[in-house]
Image 1 (tube, one colour):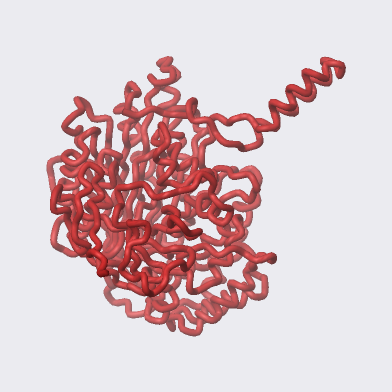
Image 2 (tube, rainbow, N blue to C red):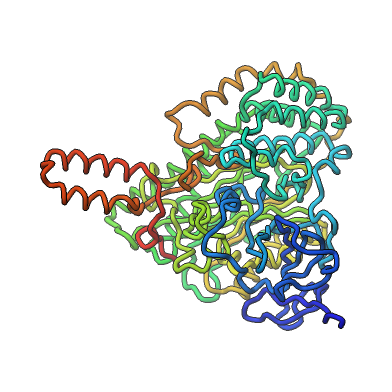
Length: 634
């Protein structure tokens, strides 16, 4: 009996019309079709099941490759997450490098993993139907020196967080390392054996790769791998220091320029605009290419009096400070830049917070704002965010959300309690856990990242007036990709995205900024040879700086490309997350009861023990209460 031809439902929950598998736009509501190509962490289907539906939903495309044909429906997730899946949740901040858990394949013990976009055509055909995402090792020998260094640089940044969750073996398995756009993406996590892998093991792998490395960096990578094998390089920060220096030299082959265009609109249903952006277009569509650029988008927290003041004051302060920050030198220290950005963000926070205090604003009357910011210079882009405004990284064949919302849903995932798609169903899932201006900067933890730019790409910064209901995922191919293809100018793309936010959502203000990164060959430069001896000239002092950044107990947060996760048995937030209210540990009530019964101990002993309980309660992370941590939004 032949099976009926599989079809895919529209991702718009208000439509959910059935469409052919190769449709690019829904035939009913005209919403672009969003396809979720998934990988199962275990092989659970046979070759005979190809092109058949599993659970009346997942189309089998390969032994471990599936297409969700009902993307508007929440996937199945059990109440208890098995231990082998918890690392994915706790490494949530490492997305898109580490895939997100999508759901359970019903009737099996296989979990489906989501990578955002994967290389495919607009009509759905996969570019890599057997692999889903191409293997790094398959692309290695033909890659430029800059790309090879960038891939190793990303792997080095992943070492510490993966090691903290006992899955760093993943980085030693070439089959699990994939390239999606300009991002090193892990296919699935591999648990460590009894003995945790070392940098010696990493050196062994990289030494093999060095044999097929670009000729201009082959000697460098051979020496780097040897130092890893010998133990003379023993920290991830040292590897990053070496690769940063090499990337700086290789970047001389290319000319990087940046164009920015930003607009903000109140929307069809709001009388005032609490959003703000920099640089705002003043009636001109002219965009000038610069070697460095700054873009900022803020969303005044809805329901809080003065949100528009908070967003405008934040942009005014940050722009004035960052405009004086010198980052154009190729050897600019990334940690120093991170430190300055953190200082400026904290400063803008305190200005708003102090104004709230001076005007005696309490609770819902306190003004606040979200923040997303991109600072582009030479071959790298620095990103910062607080709240639920977002940044997307768009290349010729990928669109990745590179920020994680500071909301209750994301926090539940980071703590290892829930799968993201399931946590979105919680009451108040979108309530913010931090925003600029709501409290003193000592309780604020900016999320900072840094990316290397290999080829032309666009960073899209926006408020939730656009990003809600997956509008960016639906529209990036139609509204942003034409800019990269030379078919549309930047200003028109921003205006069309504003229209999408107003017409498809319409419930909030909409603000969009596009940062267009262009990479061209540098005139008069044919090749740059990167020697180990050149790098080592600058290495000793840089390594010493990195050492103190890691070990100095006075430093409570260390900005990096990927937030470090603490090595602890108790799930807790990544460094950089605000913990506002904690629930009491499970043993507290029995202990209090015991103390009451044991009144013969005396008031002094009771007082002493209670102080110890309070101290532990303050220091021990536990599941967090939702009700009192919410920052309400309209």
